[in-house]
Structure formats: structure tokens, C-alpha cells
Length: 195
Image 1 (cartoon, rainbow, N blue to C red):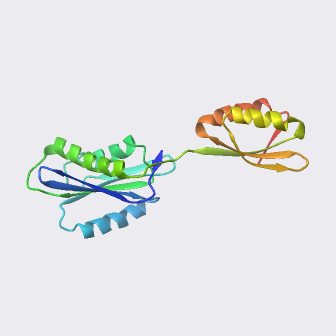
Image 2 (cartoon, rainbow, N blue to C red):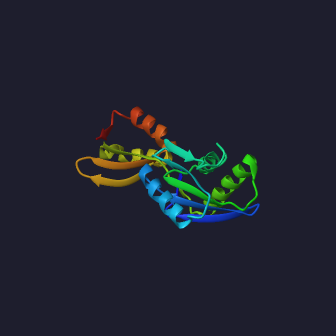
Image 3 (cartoon, rainbow, N blue to C red):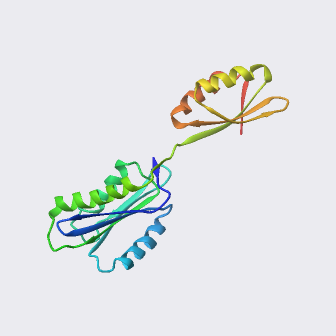
């Protein structure tokens, strides 16, 4: 999944119509209402403000609007672009100034999708990597072997505490999580997982 940290804009022209795209970071559905109101006010002579958003840790919430354009010709193409680039926590709105030439459904799909893609390409996309954190405890005798094995599994040891035993704080990316779980399960006779 990818996120953006700041608002990005782009504009394309098709058959004399202007399509102005804004890509805005959000965390809640309420935020998009304020953004659409602000953009509508700024571009009050525009015919349409079509939008889509994806929020949630895994992009589980999404919605889109054609704002008066033919059904499926605006909101869905915008949403498809957000999915194509695996964006989450983002609100995308494309404002259209009608240029006097009807584009047809296919032309609208290409224009709305193309405008938001231009904004996405101009944005600084940040890869969001899901990680799993563990704290484990082992004795000094097994510490070196365990740390070596964890490095082989591409698990980060974020902190080490030394007391009567060794306490290791671990962080594993999702792609290495299964391997870490198997390792901990296989060695549970001398590794204790702490809560």
C-alpha cells in the first residue's frame, strides 16, 4: 500500500474541457466533505466535482461519486486509478470545466482517470509496509544463535536488553512474519514470547 503526505494537483485538457485533479491525504470519511466543499467554493463555475476515496489500514473503506456525470464515467475511473497505484488514506477529486464539446462516456472515463493519474504521478508516493512486533526472552547461552537466525529471516532486532536473560525487541515485515512465527514455534523450548 502507498500513502501521500501532501496535497498534489494536476490538470489536463480534453476537447476544450479542463480537468483539474487534486490528491489529498485523509484519515476519515468526514475529511473528504470539507475538502469537496472547499474545492467546490474555489471552482464555483465548474460543472462537476467528481471524487473517490480509500481509507483504512488495508484500504477497506472506499466510495466514489460521479457528481452528475453519466453513471460510472467519473467516480469509478478515479477509484480504479487509486487502486492501480495501491493508494490508501487518500481523497481524489477531479473538477471539470465544460468546454462545450460532449466527450461521451468513453471520453469521460479516459479524462477523469487520466487527470487523477497525472496527479498520482506528480505525488510523492510512500510505501507503507505492515510490520509485526514481538518481544522475546532467551538465555545468554542461546542468544548468539537466535540473533543469527533472526538476521537470516530478515527480522529487525530493534532493541536488546540485558538482565538475568536477554530480551530482544523484534520487528518483521509482513512478508517475513510467517517465517518468524515458525522459527519461534520451533524454538519455544528456549525462547519465551513476552506480552
